[in-house]
Image 1 (cartoon, each protein chain N blue to C red):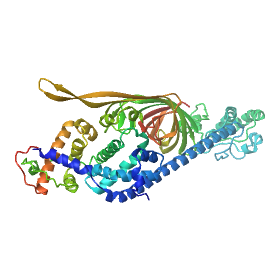
Image 2: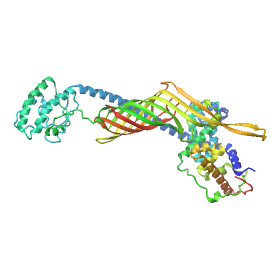
Image 3: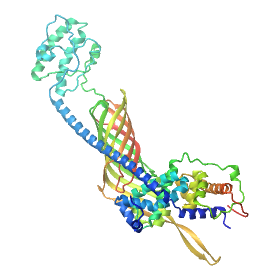
Image 4: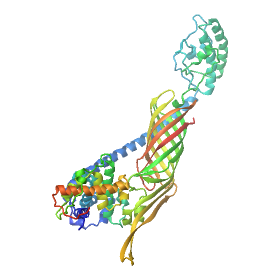
Length: 428
Length: 195
């Protein structure tokens, strides 16, 4: 007599082989359609958002590039603007200096009364202009600071320097002076030589910054995860668009060369159709994936928007989001599966036919030529970054990142996503 | 709306599949209607509840329609379809892994007694009633091993458990089914029964 479990299993198989759920099929189909419509809507929404984002990014690039060239053109003109409020500090009754005659807008010397007013610096000036402004400012600054303590000396100094200024003016047309900060007056009081830093913009506040970066990442394909990291090396440019928003692009070479390990059941679309076309269906049913290998060399072109979320004098926290396009230079995929089969043989000694179980291995391989696949905005990028100064004028950025597939990527159309960390160093 | 007309019945699986690949909704509906009961027969064994089973089946169909291009027409469609349905149900299990806690048997259920006789009249509802009382881990292990024919190694990999846990789950599932069957379907035990 059969044990309960065997009999029960037989009954389960029998009952569910002829299981009839036709009375639920209409309800099922309606539910399916609703689900399908909802999913299509969501997919269409994502697609539309991706398209809008792409257009917005491209427009931003256009605007950014135009702005960059226009601003460079403006810099090359010999015009500078007075941004700081200026106050005349020369003592009453003193004769007007020849400065007044040089330029009506400079008729009142750019001088300071107190600490706040001395927070000035000269920016946005070309090199020759800086020289000129420095020449003008130095004697005036001397006059300003010392006017409180040595009024007579000031008057003498100004008169002596006026000849010098007139001489400069005859050589170069200086209309206005852009003045933002002049802390150097304090140094001057202490008897130190004045050094006007005309380009003291913090590294993170530069309009256009260039970075070199290296990234390490792990990859995931459905229920498979890479057993070694991939590497990416590239150069990136960041253009500031607004106070806390920048546009980032670049070019990177990515190398992925590793095996995948299952983190769940081994069913995946990793090999596309290769296994389905190569392996017998019955064998595929019982096959177990033993080795999945991927070798990819690609060029990645990211287009990201950087949102600064917290800025301190020494560090920045930011979130970067955008999309990356991929151009594949080399792609190789392979998957080895093993599947069981049985053989029967007759044992003449015992007179019994015995069954033996064996395993067979099958390896499917796909390889593709260079440029055989381009995934335009195929990956969605999300990074959280922290940057801090490395040297004066340069920064180091540490960016943990996630790259999620917007579309299936590579020639095998696999749902490949990446996660890792990126280290970037500002080189300009 | 398409109904199962003679025309639909005369269409082969390959014809329906190629129609689905072309994105024709009519063919999708024919395929859905043709394989719905079969899909439910798989789904309901794992979910043990018609509503959840239908949700699972619809998710499975969505996967089927999305991946039909990968189906090799020279191979039997039903086996490919079944594999996708089983994988979908395992996805469900894995998604709800935290809530699918292993339940230890009560001492009275663990008690080994004479096994009941499986009456010939047992129907699908009776079986589902028993399945519904099994912890998901036991129910999945039982179905994967006994009905689908997976090995304990494969089940262990799918369910993220060890092989020995899979064996133990199966043994407990059988014990529990036997006890539940005996208690709830009020069957007279018979002697010399082994598990």
